[in-house]
Amino acid sequence: MLNNQFFGCFFLISLFNYCKKVCFIIMKTIATNKKAVFDFFLEKKKYHAGIKLLGNEVKSIRLGKISLNNSYAYIKNNEIFIVNLSILKYPFSCCMQYDENRTKKLLLRKQEIIQIQNKIKTQGFSVIPLKVYFEKNLVKVEIVLAKGKKKYDKRNSLKEKAAQLSIQKTLKKINY
Image (cartoon, helix red, strand yellow):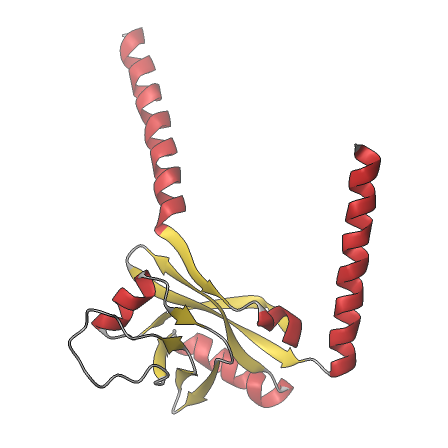
């Protein structure tokens, strides 16, 4: 009887470790918008949205041929669309005409769209994508509300970053 309990515990622990590994593999980041942190003041609340794509676009994203540079989202007729999300043509696709920068629809709940729309109207936020990732077999986009930085704000953030780097270097030297 004791052996059966031990085997059951061992089985549950190994199953838990397997699930942790699977969950780590399931959420794979494909592309990030590195300029967003530098160009915008980002709000803490992030929204995870599905994206409506064609089959060859998904295959191209799996190959990593996607760019988030200069992309943004807007709301029209209570639907949210993303613009300038560049997905290169899949090399083995048969369609001749393909628009890399076509407008793509984001899939969010109605309540989330209304929240975003209210903040855009009242507080003057913009909606920008931070990253594109796979969750299980679905392509998801992480979007965030942001306000643009002025030139002097960008300079200040560069100075702060340089100061943080110098502090880290000195601490590293002291520790060794």
